[in-house]
Amino acid sequence: MSNVILLGTRKGTVIFDRGNSAWQPRPILHAGIPVCYAACDPRDGTLWASLDHGHWGPKLSRSRDGGATWEDLATLKYPEGARHIVQYLPTPDFDPQTPAGQPEYHDATLLKIWNIAFGAAGQPGRLYAGTIPGGLFVSDDGGDSWELNRPLWNHESRGGDLFSGDATSETRWGGTPASVDYGVFEPGIHSIVVDPRDPDHIHVAVSSAGVLETTDGGRSWAGRNRGMLNDYMPDPNADWGHDPHFIAACPAQPDHLWQQNHCGVFYSEDGAQTWNKVSIPERGVHFGFPVAVDAQDGRTAWVIPAQADMARMAIDGGLCVARTQDGGQTWQTFRTGLPQQHAYDLVLRHGMDIAGDCLCFGTTTGNVYLSEDRGETWHCLGHNFPPVYSVRFG
Amino acid sequence: MTPHLYRFFPALEKLQIEVPAGSVAEVVQAIDNIAPGFCDYVLDERGALRRHVRLSVNDTVVIDRKTLSDQVADGGTVYIFQSLSGG
Image (cartoon, rainbow over all chains, first blue to last red; front, side, top):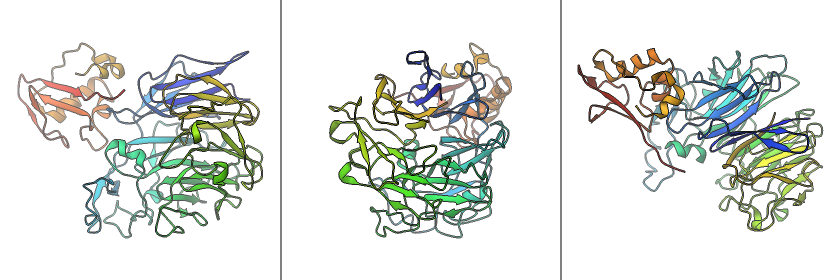
């Protein structure tokens, strides 16, 4: 049973402690600094927060005493020579002829540390971080130093090895709107799933490219987008250009993966070799950002339906959580304890988590809700938090 | 210097820092020697000035934001500003 919940919010890190009768928030940490992700390393209890400084560059912050004191780290950096092909902002002054000519290259600089993942129990000190622009970083010393995973950075789907020279292929990775805050339109890695059976087996999800898999500890990567449908592109079955919002796997059945995508909810029971669309739009299960998977049963998952990509808010002013227990064939929606009038909340991709029978989510309106009965009933932990970017049990 | 930086580098608070004349890059590096890690806040990993940070030498805004080659003469003062907005 988890006794801690961490929120990454627009104004800092919020930690809830489970008390005798209620969950109690501590005074805000990193006050005033946007925190796009906060999580607890289950192996040693280290707390992590990704600081999204508007002025001073992204930094990781680490606490080894349960949140009493924090140490900011500036150790995660793109190496000299890391370049990427410029993605053009979809602005009115965008010239469609320009990118059709010679690719334009930029030296990579860190814009956002979007999420942090932890290695297996037998890999003390192994951490992963997904970044904008499109980097997977690996640490083997608890975050004191980081290395860019070059096989993924140099993948043929994004132009090949730009450390060595010019592009040898066309980049198929598109940008994420989450990068536009930094004045660019670059891809980002927001999901990192380490297989508990085999720590060399990892899936990552990229906005906007799709899902990639390594089975050799990151030495090689392959796209895993078969079955994905991309209904906003000319070819909906294209290998690349997909927009996974978040992916998660069942810890006890890691071949069962779930993906909340821009174009619906997708489910795989073969380790992402094939995906099946399991949206039921008439039940509201289609658009959204987060997805949570049961720890034991890979067929059971939760999503938080949102209205649509062009109206990112609760459906008809009422928040609900949808659960399937049969791999997405049927969905139940639960509303007890959630506002059903004048609710315009949206839950972002890292904004929901699960621990046993408990689920928790936080919204862009600053509301935080907890369920202790597998999502069937909910109660509010507070209405006045800053916009919530991430929720993770500790 | 914008006082926001004192939050991360309290050792710099109320400090009048005197360094030899040279380029702005050398001045920033000299501050980093007093407050290790300072460069990582003001500059990105390629050594360029971060987007919302502005430096000036006396009342002249630093032009070379990429390598900070602008020169600071003897007796000159470097100011560090940040753009603040939002809510």
